[in-house]
Image 1 (cartoon, one colour):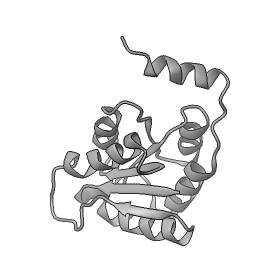
Image 2: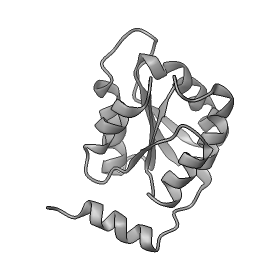
Image 3: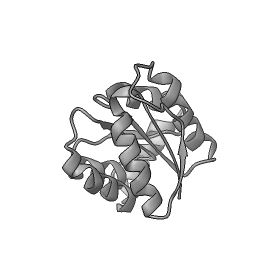
Image 4: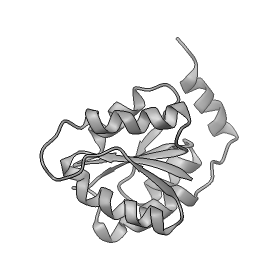
Length: 144
């Protein structure tokens, strides 16, 4: 897969860890920044990740910050993006199986580093269940 990734300063360290893990799994990684732990405004680096997924230039995206909340809000502003926040393995699995998440949001301050790879694996490897969940996703995408 081609996966876009972006973070603010508070998620930078985990972004670098995940970039290496994704490359080791054979994925192509598009790094949308930031490139250090210097303070930045997160929408500048998160929006390009969501845009890449929404436009289809990347298959999925990962966004990171301190909590993951603001990053998920930015990503979910774009039509077609289903960004879920994961703080543990089960939330990553459910984000994929129930919500067909195409963008993952992680909070470096809330996810243990020892669980980071497992969360990534769960999100990458869990298939979408479809069925009643597909009906709900279609309802989300309906225009008001």
